[in-house]
Length: 95
Image (cartoon, rainbow, N blue to C red):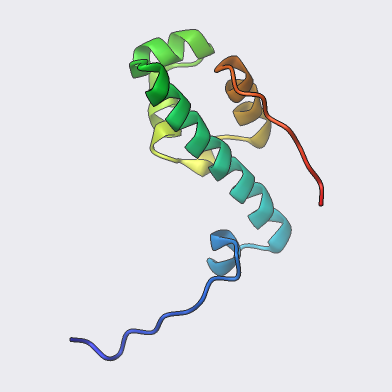
């Protein structure tokens, strides 16, 4: 067993923990949350990647990147558009 392992408690946003500037980290967190919910929605619908691409108006490789969580490949605006097309109702709350 390795006793040199150091565990650091998260500050509540993994992107802040990874060193991103707080404002950028919040946007990345929102994008990741939408991607997680989108992947769950596509799975619940039983859609193949090709069918999801057709229904959402994007390419199949784009759906693959969405499912794999490639946050850097999607703007927040595009993710909100895809979520709405998938039948989700995105809301913005500022607290």
